[in-house]
Image 1 (cartoon, rainbow, N blue to C red):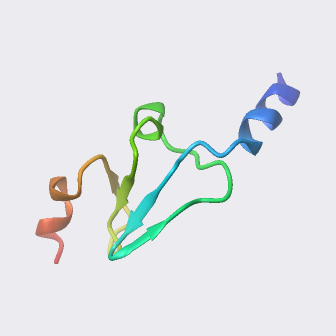
Image 2: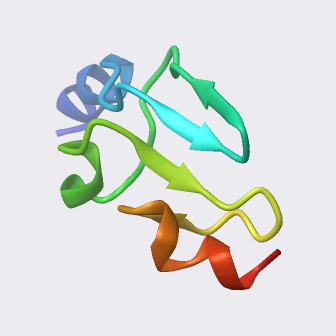
Length: 63
């Protein structure tokens, strides 16, 4: 099992992350829930670092 986990963590699983005004393409494995990995982009609040599926679900109230 240990060897399988090692192979999985080497694979890039997230296409794009949006952090504030910046769009970032991760280089490595990102340990997000499977439902988030299937999205085109994961939105991360630049103030509290919470991640969401859609930008308006959290970030409007934080600014």
